[in-house]
Image (cartoon, rainbow over all chains, first blue to last red; front, top):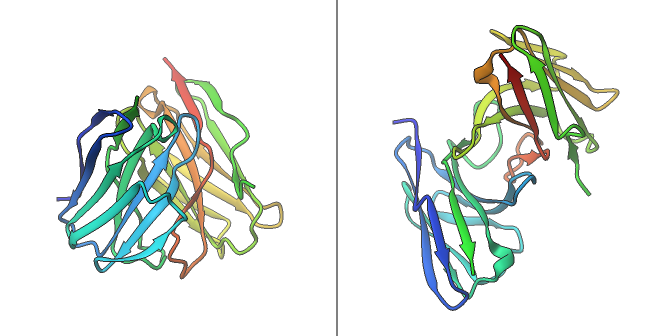
Length: 116
Length: 113
């Protein structure tokens, strides 16, 4: 299995809703990432988990809450989002969290989030 | 301040011709560079990379050139095929960094049959 699977593919939520995005990989990767991508912009790093521990939080608002229940799963819990949070949320994984030439990121297809 | 820049948002090329996608960077600490390709409704997929100790890396139809003095890299696709139509992201990284990749804004390549 060489894939990163993200669910749901599309999510529409109101500003008072609580929802979650899910990400799963079975490649034995020990680092997992959340990126946010707005239209015509590059992916922006949000969080990095290394060996199931949060290692990087790029000053993301607390209305986004990541969780890594085990080495294969990564969740992003969403609460009280704003319309400007509408974007494509990409999950990625890699063998380790520190860069090396072989440590290429594998991305999922993304979850398209719309906040009304 | 964008540290990795792709100044051409779009490029159209005839099938069979060469596609050249360009990328500039400002951070001299970057020592590894990658290109990712993204189709609609899919995540980015790794295409090719180059270390700063090299000036060229080739993989089939894809070649990446690095000019460190100009802080510039380019991706050449020869010959271009309609299936190459996608958004191409340039990315850069500092070895040992836990922050992984800094992406450019992407170039939409359209290969016309």
